[in-house]
Amino acid sequence: MVDSNAWRDAVEKSHSIVQAYMAIDGETSVRVRIYDDKQARLTVKIGISDLTRHEFEYPVPLDDARTMAVASRDRMIEKIRHIIPIDGFVWEVDVFAGALSGLVIAEVEMNSDNDDPSLPSWLGREVTGDPAWSNAMLAAQGWPGNARR
Image (cartoon, rainbow, N blue to C red; front, side, top):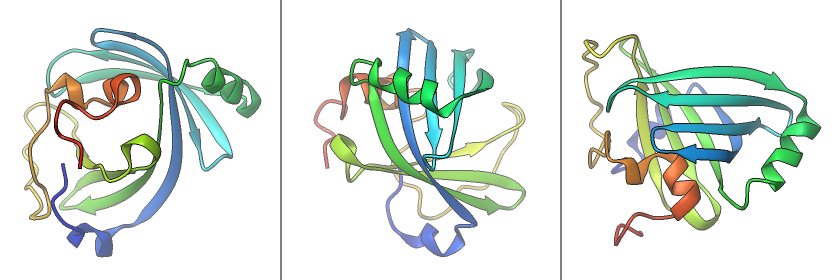
């Protein structure tokens, strides 16, 4: 999670994302993502470990993505993703909207479980490996437990 707004000055680019889950089964999910209301991708994610996920992503027509999002049975999140390069790693800071408004989560893209990025000072509570904080569970169940704001 993110503790402060100190990251904002380092943002390289940002995208609005609507992310709808077609299927969620344990560590596997199928989702459609609409970027900036201009393009869409279908993704299958398979959890391998707390840190590693296999991801298979394919472009889909925007109208098809919108239809899939409506059919997702409200398992949807809206967020602005901010891209922040730090010391050779790419950090993604997601600022959630709608029912998850107020939630800000960061994650770093790594090439392997052995990567050891330095942690920015603006990071807060670690939620890696806690399934309640995955985007799929946030879409399906909302704020985990008593964590709301």
